[in-house]
Length: 161
Ligand SMILES: [Zn+2]
Image 1 (tube, protein in one colour):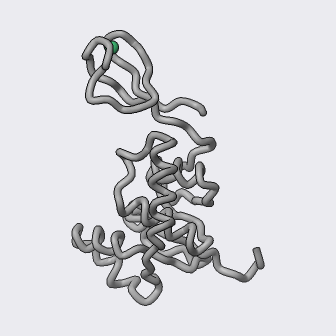
Image 2: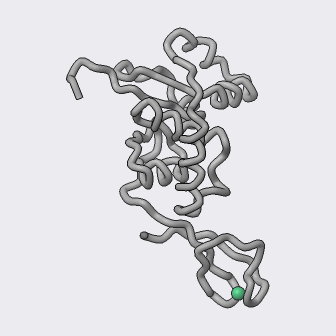
C-alpha cells in the first residue's frame, strides 16, 4: 500500500452508527441497503456525509459467494441481505470492511476480506457457530428448531475451527 493512498473502505450500518466523524484516511463506500437502514432510523449522518461517501452496489455473484461462506461458518441466520452486500462490495472493490458486527467480521475473515472494527475489538480468529442442546448436551453443526434427539432448546455457542 502506498503511504499517501487512503484506504478504500466499505462501511456497514454498525460502523456508521458508532462514528462521530469519518476517519480521514479512508475512501468511504456504502451499499444502497446501508443507506436505507440509516434512513429507516432517521439518521442524518447519511445526509451530512453525502459528499464524502460513495454509494455502490455489489455484483450478484459476489453476494452469492458471501452467502455460501456464511452457510459454511454457520452465520447465515445472523447475516442480513444488507450485511451480505457489504461484504460483497468489499470483495468487488478490493476494500476493507469497517464493521462492529461479529458475524460480518467472521464471514469476512473466512473469505480473506480485510476488516477493521470501529468501536469494539475485532475478532482474532475465525470461529464457527455450533448449537448445544440444553437438555442432552449434544452439539450440532447446524441450527435446528429444537434438539432432534430429545426435543429440548438449542443454544448457539462459538467454537474454534
Ligand atoms: Zn437434546
